[in-house]
Image (tube, rainbow, N blue to C red; front, side, top):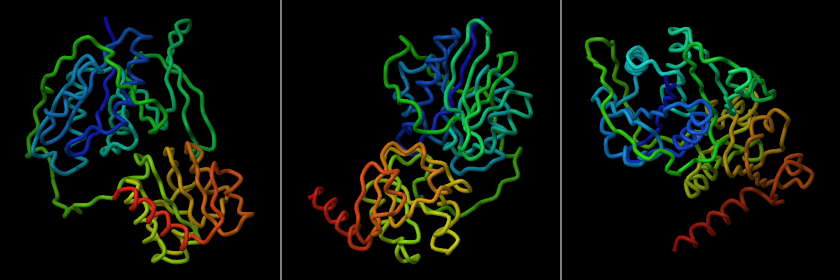
Length: 327
């Protein structure tokens, strides 16, 4: 009997996020090794139109549309995943750490006594032992753990973003699309309405470009420049521990050992000296660009490109250049 790998799709409004295609690449690679089907779950208030992006990339797309999904509530998502697993019995559940609702999955794994792996970097099958091997980032990414498990029960695996190529190849000759056959009633939940912000900053985990500031930004007002630059680059804003401790930025924007571990395509360090604490958080960055007026700042030793200069002079010029390219 074929195994089943289920991918939880990540989308926003009218588009499926690239991390979904990364998960599908990972799922299809493993599926070929263990002879498994790959199924994708699309959740939302109106997601049918998004399913066409997944045709040929998986065996089955399951759609679940419901008015209760207009806002995120832990109780709602938890019930959806509990009922889905109980009805369909997936062997592997793949989800990215940037998906909203990730607080559900450790509890889901505990409920079903499943294998649970967070910070997963890769998966491969060993036909000799029958184990699925993986590497996992632990201790805030300072160490890599190697492990293995057998599919004697379900496995819930949470991956880090930007580690796999987003496959757009037509892996399957035919993709079925059908509704997820579970029921959801408002009477099952104690809900609360929270006023939402219409413009939500891009999260550090999913951003392909991150513009971050340190002590060199001098104040919370200095970070306004970073928001302007990040907006033009369609990126996210980050901060060092020192900037957060100074009250210039909220903790959710902190990058480093006690903050977020990120792996963007481009990381722009503005007024950041380059402490070990901070460098631990940007090890996964593909290209690092540093702007600092101190030519001996340690960050330059870890950068692909460096600009020696005052951030308050360099950043406005970068913004001007970007704006001129759009004219």
